[in-house]
Image 1: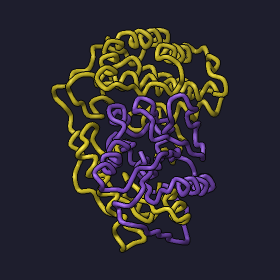
Image 2: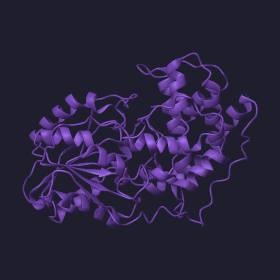
Image 3: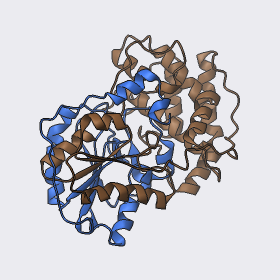
Image 4: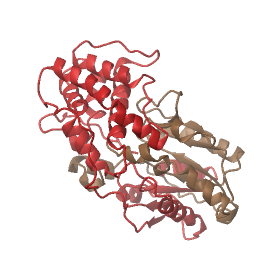
Length: 254
Length: 153
């Protein structure tokens, strides 16, 4: 966003950037930036703590009142109170997912798991009145089937006009992840992102299926497919030893 | 993934040293008091309104997000999977603080909130974004926006 700030400011629009990665902001020297000590993905901090979020927004906007620039980088001093794990959280029960095993078994488990999580996901939607499932334009059941078919080695054609099959695989994986993580967070407990991620990547059939898909399709002759499965399915921190591609692409974060 | 320090070292280094054009100028635009300003959000989270095409890979263009958009209709199509999405899933203000801006406008802390907000896909090469960013500046001016908050993701 530092470059965007530069271009807009040159055009006469005043900007303030939120910075999640201070060294990056120091390098790029935007007109104004507020560094925040939150995890990537949470530029305004904790969900559903409006007073806290407002402090962050206001701390950023107050930089418009400073006259000491260009290049102001200020720091927001308070950590995200929702970054801590919640010991009371219990993930929805799913059958133990074997990390290894025949692809057909894993594919069937993935599809079954989506059904098992339906009740939890409905509770999530009732609680928050929203879902972020929807990038693929398919139902989550269709997403699971599409991912499962790739795992079964069928290389299914794209179900959406104008979108390549590898791209649809990426969106279907994104939707499956969103569905499972929303289902897992239904209820009164406030799990941290790490708790949710640990559950998804270590306990679920969906997580195991995505790991397996990555391992299998990295050997594909389709370069685009290789790139997508290598870099845009399993977070770098979750990649298992020995499966890291030689050519991890940079610039995966804004 | 939580903070930069929790990422594998090689990737943390790549993010920290992420290339940004070496600009020769340091532009600086001043304006009226905060209570007079009209504020827009320009995100780099790859946000799209449900039903519109998601960003593909590293598209350099931007998408408009009308201020009337409902929380259930905003999606993240950023290509990176190395950031938390569960905060956004629970509350869109974590990434797109429109409710907070509306409150600040209602209480008079800022002048007003723009009718339209925008999003780029932040992993795109900034040089390719430049013509779109300059085009966006024209639309922001038309919308009488004089303060932009730029959240990454």
